Length: 149
Image 1 (spheres, rainbow, N blue to C red):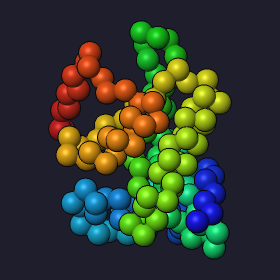
Image 2: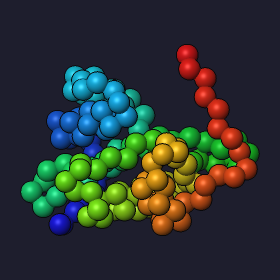
Image 3: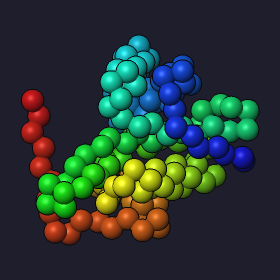
């Protein structure tokens, strides 16, 4: 399978939104293509995220990852949160996720970031293996907390 990874633009909304909707469904959210389109349109319009899109040789979207810029006060530098990673089931185990992850790291380096972070479910062991195979380290120093508003 030939894979191309590129930065998506608002002109790719119709290609990316179904992938994003499927990603949300993977995490037990109801299908809502309209919501997916609105959410992504706002991210594009306000330049609030960077979305990397993987397409196959026919130009069909087969995966994406979404990055959000953050800043480390302690390190006084930019970091990125890799918030979303999704590959359509029929393209899994074909190197799509690896290509997306590598492109994300290359993008972050090019932007002068000093690091990247991500979270995944404790039960998502296949993703954990992928991350660790690419050099990501599980944080043993800090605990993560969330506040639902």
